[in-house]
Figure 1 (spheres, rainbow, N blue to C red):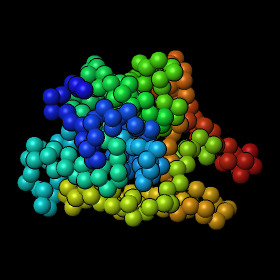
Figure 2 (cartoon, one colour):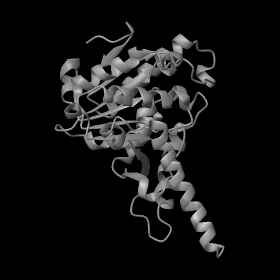
Figure 3 (cartoon, rainbow, N blue to C red):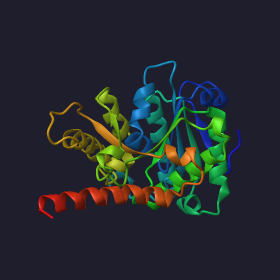
Length: 284
């Protein structure tokens, strides 16, 4: 299996061939950076954990060279950080019992370049080999441009597939912008109560980020707990850990839908909900 970068890699924790590992995949996530999968796609990881009939595969688009660093990692070069982050992602794949992790190894600039078709082609190659039922990526309202780029490249790759080879569900998930702003009717709610110890370990494995200056471990678990409590104002909590997603499935069911207009419709519904409540409670 060939990808655009000679430095790309398919890591398979249990040692079977990359082709077999992709073929058994049922849930697939495409993230921009190492550790994005563990933050945004825990629903897919837990759906497959400890099972032989479901398998999770992750795709990392970029090489992770530009991450902030402090402490032990303060003096690390970009090349050293790339090596460390790839090693951490492999560890996460072992702990989470992934089928495979594919490192595409593009720079952030390459991933963000809309003229770079190699990224789309690589993701398409993986999708064709895996035929996953569910695909997770970043939500299109994420504030990190590389994340939005990864989501758009994933959308383009899926749209290249024949309709009968496309996933049945396609979700845009939370990393660099929460989705609690969406109208409740638009939210996809992932209830993530099982295996909290595994969930904590998966984010904590990325020591270069946690000790390097970003407490993603605490922030990710805190966000999930906050979502679980603040989801319903007039009911007791029914979950302890929750993530939200934007349902992107309509974008792969109808290729004529514009991604920007699709997200704008979500924003408009949120704005309408807020302004309607203010008008009603103001007696207008």
